[in-house]
Length: 348
Image 1 (cartoon, rainbow, N blue to C red):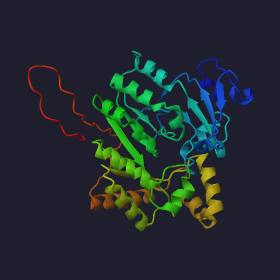
Image 2 (spheres, rainbow, N blue to C red):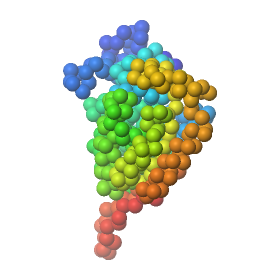
Image 3 (spheres, one colour):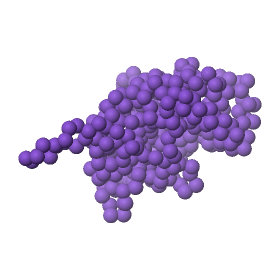
Image 4 (cartoon, rainbow, N blue to C red):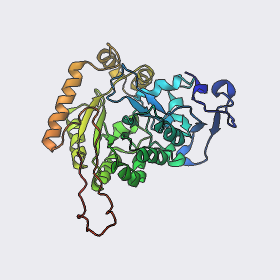
């Protein structure tokens, strides 16, 4: 796949046509501190609902990704490889060259209305974060959620971003008519580790504030404890501190996921390890000698430990692929008979 495959038609452009295709992309920069050094490539995509490859370990079949590239700049991000499909750099380029599918909402609404669409669950935030900084300017998610709400289509969102709280009312409206699952990613609470491996993300405690706020508004929110980073974030004291903080936030569940290093991400992460923790290079090479995933024994050890801590602190793991239905009280129907009192929001 190349850049032009994402185009939906001609558009005035300033990008280098050899790299992007002059008729496909509008390139912009913004003179604001939060977007310093960031370039946005606005495209009109041809499709927005993507089928997950059959060989994937993901527990869902369909995704929507309104952005490519991510200003969170997580050094371990497995999605880095996708930038190479567009002839873009998977290192700094992934962090600073952001593709924006400006027609995402209208395209999704059209695809959901197609007779070929059967209302399957759609996952968002599983490739790059749909609530990264760019969303504050482009505001693609409100239209996406509205489209899903209007069709009663089940969906889930995974994010490290606090901007999801902007769309709280829309999420509650959607949850009144379909299954909605919300998860926040918090792999660790270690401040030094966060600053070096996730430099563009909100701090872990701010993400846990998101969980707390959603819970306070009756929307159950799970935490994906990801990634658990070997040798840097897997000490028993670190795991305990993280699970304790997750429990204190009111999370409905905690699900650990050990760091995996796919091609593209592996090279970038190992370069970072060589610069910041050179004594760990050989240990990582041995641990990931068989491929992208840590050995099963290591994954099982981390999972067992986190689940034991979760039980101690009163929370449990999420069932794989489970979406969550949030029961939102309906407005009383007009009529002579009085309606029942308000219904408490519950998570099923």
